[in-house]
Amino acid sequence: MGARTPQAAVEAVVVRHGDWWEVFLPELGTGTATRDAHMIDSYARRIAGAALGIRPSRISVALRFKKQAPAAPPER
Image (tube, rainbow, N blue to C red):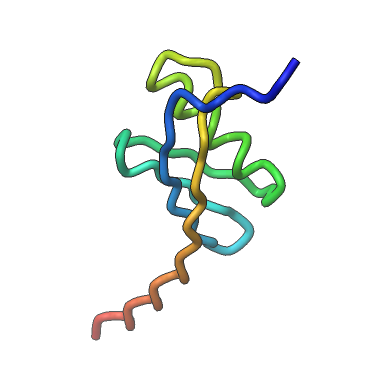
């Protein structure tokens, strides 16, 4: 059995916040978070699959890692 062509392609924007990785799918207006970096792709596929109504295995995910924005200085 050969590899199947994905039915959908989505981008996932990933940002590290302390011990957490935040995963946002801007095209779908949804996201999730995980402490396990190895699960980012899997979680992005699952969330996209649920939003699009197709199997996660049929989704191609492009991960884009962004640096965390610097914290704003405390107001005085």
